[in-house]
Image 1 (tube, helix red, strand yellow):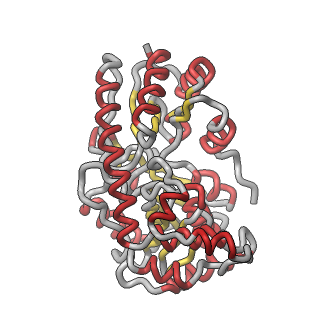
Image 2 (cartoon, helix red, strand yellow; image 1 turned 90 degrees about the horizontal axis):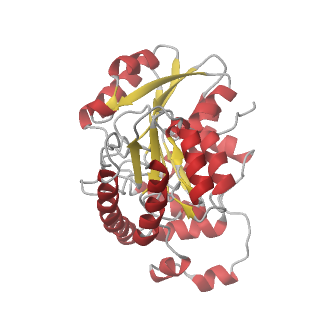
Length: 368
């Protein structure tokens, strides 16, 4: 098993702490530990507690708290991971074997392009179509999800488009997975980051072939604690724990404690509301900015999430364009080609408004 370079993550990890303006991020502006203390995190406990190993699959207290987000789930249906990316990785590692097929929604966060291939699986892509409100190309979808398909991955709300699947689309996806006896990973890490619309419905409970992954990185604005989770059939969750034992062993003890505070209903809703207010302000800033760029620049306003996925005119490669912006303006954004769709740029909407305005001003200089 050897995983190829994850181009977007390597680009971000190389440059995000070097540039003056990082607009490559994708979550809501992170909260501070002080803000979490105001929500009830016991700092005195954290300062005095021995830094031992935590429970390997997440403390019972945290898993019990998470069951309240997924009606009908018990603590044995949940495993806590080191971020949503580890959750996605462990599901793939647990279910895929050589000669299986894997269906991947694009554009997307492309972690699960390299991982299935490293396990010997064939990756079949199906595209979301901008001309159809970013719903799937159903002909491609049915070709990608076939009798040889073991696992299907999508993000809803989507990274990077910010689109949310209709109920009819969700039902069609689940029905196809059941028909082909494939499992579905529904990455719901942006659920709760809705900008103007109602809360995104979860895939949880639609089928016993649904596995939900999520975490604190995006809608909650707490990426640094690296807490994610898997919700699924107990036998699959148990197998993921088996893989976890040989990977990172357990979540961080302090992170588990922070997560217990964050997912409490009152705190969760406060964090979601904080993000919603920020994204509403920043979306207006970004819409005004795009409208001033001229002909050929466009984007469909995201329904959820902290991302502007913008089409630009011409056929200039997006990687080269982003490198030029980085080198000349010390500003980092993500090329669409690293998300499975050339001709687009991904720009962060979750920053402080003044930071966003200056970053956009710098980007515009190179787009003129």
